[in-house]
Length: 184
Image (cartoon, rainbow, N blue to C red; front, top):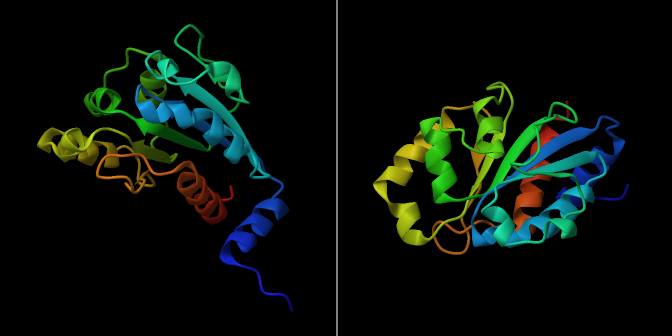
């Protein structure tokens, strides 16, 4: 009997699951938004995943929408759910949007989506801000508020100094693990 690595096993289980897993990725105005095309491409490599992106205007300063291989919603679009997403991932989550979400402000498409998000569905946050912003006491309060939004939320690890968004491959591995644990 052939042994599979943990990654191979996750991939195998995802491939045998015929249900599509719908992921909505939210992008905010952090330089880490330049990773958006790579993030979408790597998520699409997961056999059962369907991806859409909702972006803030500030995020579009850091990447070219035409390089993202999935449907991208902007503030100019009227929100239409292609399906009810199984998972909302906000990454990068900049300090500005963190504050808006924690305060219930919904002045762009992404914050409106979060404000109407079903609390029984998971939210994953990928913070991306400078170390001083991340270590500020207000940020700690805002993060605590975000944790109350859904019982299944997760703030992804910080790997390039405190406040920096994890690498795309790290985030994708986390998504794979989440999907394996929650296939429905």
